[in-house]
Amino acid sequence: MSSLSKCIGMMDEGIERTMRLIPQLPAVEAKLSRLMLMVSGSLNEELEFELKPYKLNHSEFLTLMFLYSRPDSSSTPGELCEFTKQGATNMTRIGNTLVKRGLITRGGSEDDRRRVVIRITAAGKRLVLKIVPPLFPRLDAMFNGFSDTDKKNLSRLLRKLAHNLDQATEDTDTHLGTMKATK
Amino acid sequence: MSSLSKCIGMMDEGIERTMRLIPQLPAVEAKLSRLMLMVSGSLNEELEFELKPYKLNHSEFLTLMFLYSRPDSSSTPGELCEFTKQGATNMTRIGNTLVKRGLITRGGSEDDRRRVVIRITAAGKRLVLKIVPPLFPRLDAMFNGFSDTDKKNLSRLLRKLAHNLDQATEDTDTHLGTMKATK
DNA sequence: AGCTCATATTTCATCGGTGAAATAAAAGAT
DNA sequence: ATCTTTTATTTCACCGATGAAATATGAGCT
Image (cartoon, rainbow over all chains, first blue to last red; front, side):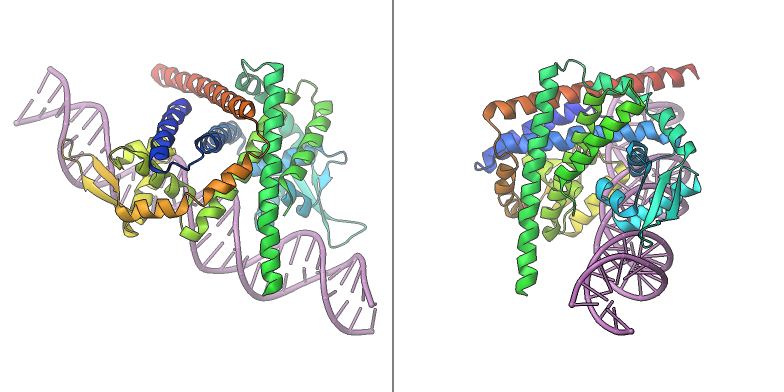
């Protein structure tokens, strides 16, 4: 496999050369967004790799962790879709496989009987406790050489980025909204 | 759609609560890595959305841009696999579709006749020039409110993260290597 | 010349996810 | 009481990518 750093080097050179062909290109920003995508791609790969022994994929793990972190150990399909950014179709499938493995249960809600309540089981919690702690050394290693201010800054900048991305998609959505309304 | 910021809020709360259940959890680092994944997920979505009108996906776009940025407008499947982190199977398929659309050509190499030389065509270059400049405003908007030092810091921190990730996977790989050698 | 290694392609089964449409059931509004 | 909306599921066709195995071809070594 080619190392991430090597890919980043190629990317840097590529953008430098592209800048000569398209001078208006905002090179700094282009590099930053490419960096984001490449680094998190690698991070994602790493996570999937760690989950493989437990036959869980990223979405299933997220779902499980979200339930684990809830005060009442439960949620609904809709809420899980929001948080994990999955479509309803996929959420149903994830639910099916996790139920089949006995990691969650699905039951009708008392108060709103359209709603389905998804709850993590004792076995699900046990699995989380088996998966998560071994991840900690990796997590620490990832941030080797990061000072406390480094971490604070990274958090701040990523959150700012998130905010800007929200703005952008909000604009797009409202435009689509007006287009539909006009039509 | 649920906004990125709202998801980040849920994530923050989730990790806080999880920390109470698993006190050794390195919460700061966990949040940072979740942030990375969430923000870049959204960034990725945005990019795919921009590319959709041109019937290109992320990998095809990367491939095209890499070729565009090369001094001689060409590369080889192997090199493209490295840079785009795609498997050979997928690279072949990407090549097929781009050739079919007249955006690249595939030909035998002169010096090493195992090698295939992939070259971006004039039409391919034209498409790049049609796609890329409209991306610039988005790119600028993404980094709204970022000072020059913010950008420098973000770049520095992402590159450091990349370096650490390389170390981690290198360790894993060499362990696997010695395991295989021992076997 | 012969052997091994490297490069690329193709085929095939599989995975994870999407999007649209149909169905069901119940909540909420008037 | 009916109508509309919300919530969830299911089905189906499809997309993009993976991984393994088979094939082909040619480079490089001895």
